[in-house]
Image 1 (cartoon, rainbow, N blue to C red):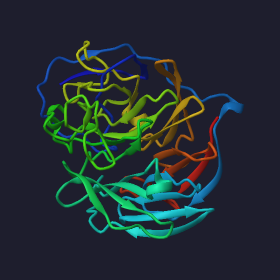
Image 2 (cartoon, one colour):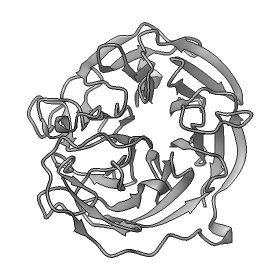
Image 3 (cartoon, rainbow, N blue to C red):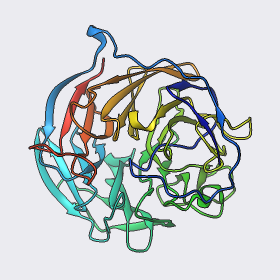
Length: 373
């Protein structure tokens, strides 16, 4: 495995992939061919932004949650939230939290369980909600309905996604094209990321029925991009471009601009250094500063939650480039997993201190309301 070793933050252009630590557990032994490592020059450390532009926590939406993983908003402004380890789906309306269903098929272990959630862009007419679930057999995407009170029957629309104790991916997001995008992990079996016959280590693009839509790069395959280790965040910007945050192994975490059909290099490359053969990340972090998870776009910027790094990152997006990463709330709220944009433009940020790797405080886990800066 060829790895560029960077001491600070790198802002790259274009296309690579690869890395962001498996939450923050030790990396598994490499199963990929190895080669000589290369070294890049250290870069300056990021600094906190000046006073008036700092984001602020303006409210606590909910407390006492058990590893809230996915958050999706309904047209009426209420939210549906998944809990990874309990398998519960919660509704949050005007500060009131209630259970609306439990996914009994979920088999939580390690980083697996009930993960992402997405609301149909035509929810007003079809009431459809989509979930990413780890079962005993696999990871799968299921469809259900929500009538404002309870979830309906679950229907599997895509199964056979590899599952594991680590690297299960799990983020769901509808694109401006009306199709559903899903991130998957390589479950610690690195070779899956470079295998186009496997759904592991990929970003997928499917219809609401689970089929490969027209325009996918590999015919009737749901694969949209490949060579990923474990993508944990997906967000579309105001130009309709897809961005993804990704765990590296032990050196680099990444923010990638996702290009149709592109290979992001894992496990052959981690961080930058694809030599034109693989997509390069836009931003690279040391794993101690990130282990990036949820990703959202608001006010012309990307907002990224950091688990091991215990902070919220803000990344400016100018034209095709992303850069100027700035961190906030360092160590103040513990592990930050999910970041979403609420209907009012503020961010909802979930903590993940009860996931077995954090130090939970009274009231954890929480959902915080943050006004972007």
